[in-house]
Image 1 (cartoon, rainbow, N blue to C red):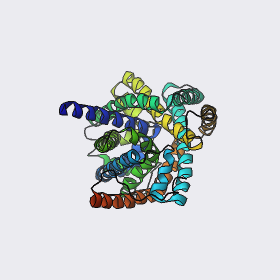
Image 2: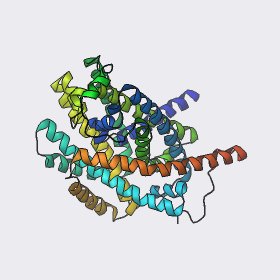
Image 3: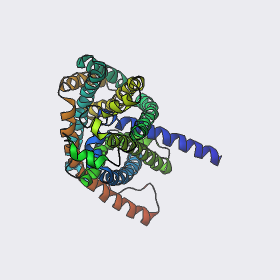
Length: 381
């Protein structure tokens, strides 16, 4: 019986991990641009230091969000910001996050067009229209179907990250050792932040901003505290291992990829054009898997109940608007939007830490593991 419970816990944790990885792997990560701008651009040891700090922060907030989501069981998942930041400031973050995630959807659509155009030479509008349509159709299927779809895409993206990272280093074994010299001889156009330590905080802050409402909706699906904590931990570790692998692969080949829109495609093409073609499809899958929850969260903010008759027309309207905004350049949009949102998210992270300290104190005093920090009666009204 105990063995069955452990097996079930592992399977559920892996499902959550797959969902988180697929959700977080969008055009920024899948193309290699996010790893380049946040980590690889600083050199080997600063990159490693940044990755360690970022992973620790990811593990912390992922487990907290998953567990708090399980306890709160919110119908409108965006309202979890009120729990962390109070009613007034939390409401501001609800609105900001809805706009931010919606803007991210436009970046994903733009990225799909850019990547397909760069690799296959097809018109950018083909990729943009195609991505907008399949994302809208998937969201119309509902959140349970979304979790099923993206949790199955996650393992594919993990394999992709392993191949890019390992192949990138193997193809250029001296690349990491010589990276400092190469970095001195090139000019990288975009840095997400001015220093590796700022990147180490900004990157997980950005991820947190995306994951707060998603985990609030995912947490109640956990059967108990243990499952919620392991689910959050597995998701954080799986995603950051993927990030680290790609960052190492990009740095090992920094001289060849620093000015490319999709560094990961350049690396896979170095292995084989056929593999490059296959992974160009994986890139699009990564964008697709991230775009789905972005659209769902934006629609959920306006119409919380997906069974409401207004929900489906709203999804279609939001998709059209995101497609129109997605006509703007992909790399520049990402470089502006990602760091800015990460800086704003520091406030939420501080609020989360304060709430966790209060919650742990109450749990210690009462012995009730399901306890939460005090919630004002009118907080969610």
